[in-house]
Image (cartoon, rainbow, N blue to C red):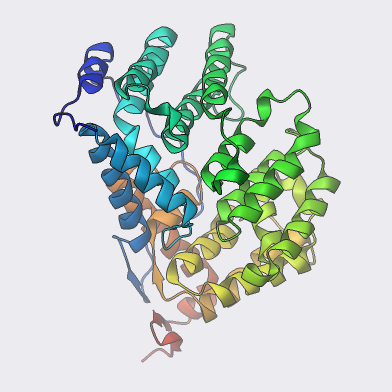
Length: 409
């Protein structure tokens, strides 16, 4: 296959179709807890260029460069090898998905600019230009998956954020068109035959188009998780889709979380139960009436026993200490789960990864602003946890050697 110039035809067309100079979206307001000034007498290293963030950026950039140079054959091979090889970042994010995101990034940025202006036709046309620039290569399953993933990203944009007003008819139609395009692209390919978690994840993401999604959700996700049990994001997506507002119920969600924990026990112990419930509890406090807190706590221990790196320690500390923070009566499920913060800090956390604390609660902004706010949030949560020691003038030191509380003087 011939490689194109550094600026292939489809990018030139994208540039003409879309105005990239639109204003940035304002950051959402942020919550009070975790956004105060950093405390004194609290010593812990801050890793501002975490290995996970760097790895994801590097992979996306590689995908973007291959697409910009029209090196579709090399991109298809990289996607296939990463997908079938179950390549993941240090934070267990599938490399194939990140490569696909990077390859579609130029077109998506332009389409998002059009969506900001509610220009449905232009946003859709930009992805059509991307497909045309690939010169019919979507017969390759992984290039088809790349495009389908981009259409799903746009479908989510037109759907709007949770809690936002119902989308207009034009936005609903735009979402339906992008879902239809994604389904068309992946329909010819069977994920199990191709040993492709990427395609299986897309099939799950297209459940909205199924006549009876509730009847398919468990089986489709079972295929996906069996293909790639080492990636928590598949289990987290299963939980979100089993929320009563989607395709499930509280009883069914808990049942599938238990089944998932059993099927992935060799990798995660009881951790599968945590991953399925994780985003549900973060988004809907009613879930605390249905989750088994003891099993969830056991799962937290099992995850960190098996993946005891600083990415995972920060992810779960931020989840327990910030995402789920709020009023919790003694003996409640919420109190039991958020109480895990203590032993996570004592036994596992050795440095702060600000990007994970920024993501743990909405409203952190982006770029350097998010990193600064993530650092402040982490330090504030730690200061609150060790408040009694700090008030006595003690110094709390967390290092690679562990937690040490030094007496005043």
